[in-house]
Image 1: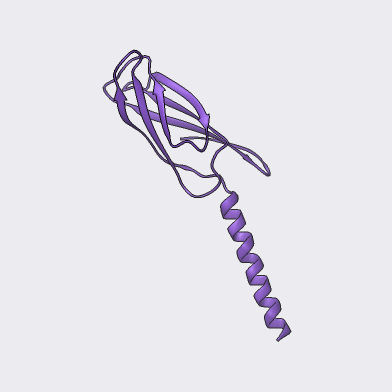
Image 2: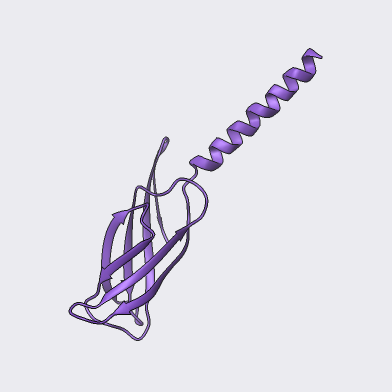
Length: 114
């Protein structure tokens, strides 16, 4: 009986450790897209970010690029923000969003660009 309890305790401990490791891993950017552009002076790009499971980033640098991959606008925000408005230098025929995230983890910093 004692060996069964010890085995069950070990399984529970391993499950808790696996859950903690999953929750501590850095969340990846699942999607980043320009949802609309409001014309004006300056035009505003409305950007939507979504993350996968894991720890949200400490901060995110969101760059809006034009059809030729030229920089049109950029903003640095708190990593928990999902909807952003970014002022642009000018409008473009199409847009691409590049996101660089910074995670502060117990073992050090993790920086990713998507």
